Length: 273
Image 1: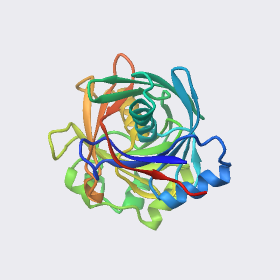
Image 2 (image 1 turned 90 degrees about the vertical axis):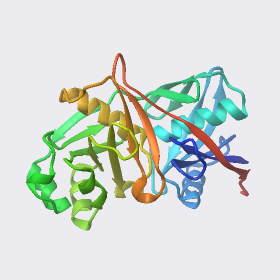
Image 3 (image 1 turned 120 degrees about the vertical axis):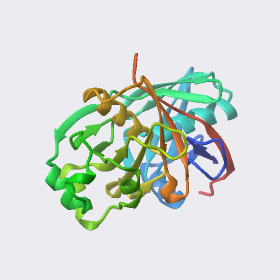
Image 4 (image 1 turned 120 degrees about the horizontal axis):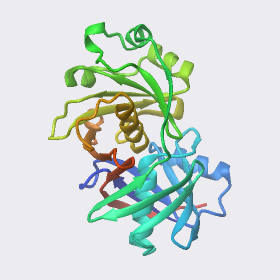
């Protein structure tokens, strides 16, 4: 059974977010998929369980669980299908959360994720206690849960320095369990010419820190749009520096929400079953 490893949201191998894509995966049981995802130990592994005219059916697993949608598996899988199976430049990937359209514009692949839904707001004091920061370190936007298949607790920070220094402590994990969410920290500063930087911690999904999070980027766009905090309709969001996997995610907010990125192949092989 063939598999490919693609680095998503990057132009260079061994940066961005690595993804394992398993082709012809229909014979695998759910247990098999979970074991393979745990063996790969990437933030997600994608299984192509059926190729259809104009697209494919795909299941996505973290090392700990199946997820209904995740951004870098959708873009990485679409790239593999286009490059290896020569599927068209416009595809529909059918994931548990619904149909996701993907298209190419030059080297960039763009997807239209499920429309994120804004959830409950979280008290600033809860977030300060969990992160161990003072009021002066939080930005002006309210902490809030936003979901696009995976739920994220959005936390706005004022400074890039603070963002780089923080981690996800046991107290922070307790907060995330309370809301059933991953933690998305962001600030409107960047190191390499981008417009914003984010970090994502997903202990509930078996992912200590994610190098590049397409679903989180979609939620960030919806969150900034909701709170009227956007100056431009298209942003470049940086992620992954703290885990030595620098990544760039492209975000469009209008006329519809889209997340884009480049993909590069880093390995290919055969699964032994």
